[in-house]
Length: 202
Image (cartoon, rainbow, N blue to C red; front, side, top):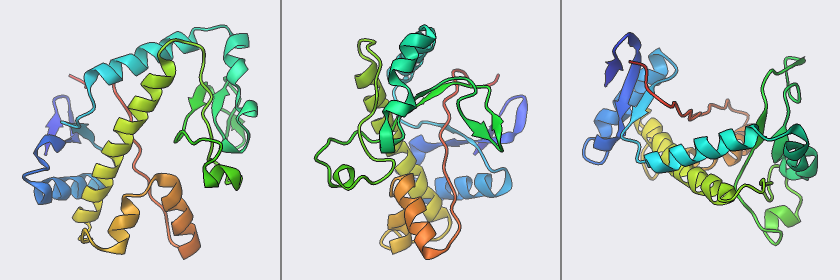
């Protein structure tokens, strides 16, 4: 594990060596998460093309007129809790957020049993009419889901949880399922949040 020049307290974990040095990488993640609470990841396997595509298409969407963006407002997403929200459209501690965004999740068809049962946060996504937007988002989410599960397994390994242990299996579940299971068990919940940076600090 290293640190970026100019930011000596931000650990950098290289996932490209995890296949041959899983214990070492797991220990680095455990140290970084325990001591700092966050870290940079390199060698993650998400293609630069996928990242560039989602950034370019996102910029194109947010430059659209408000009337067009609101055609996929979250009010149209129903129980799936998907879609666009404008600046001030969300609250943090009762105060309007100064950001706009779009919520996406696993793309589920209407015949999915969870959708038929009206389980909250499950359903179809709302997409703008920008060519290639839907495909880029779904491809990116697939790549990030795979990366997140890799990280969660390494987190478990760093905690000494065996690969066949039920707790390790929980770590590999999507976050929503993990939260649901944890709430039923009356335990705490932690998240792995993946943030893309356009360029690492120099």
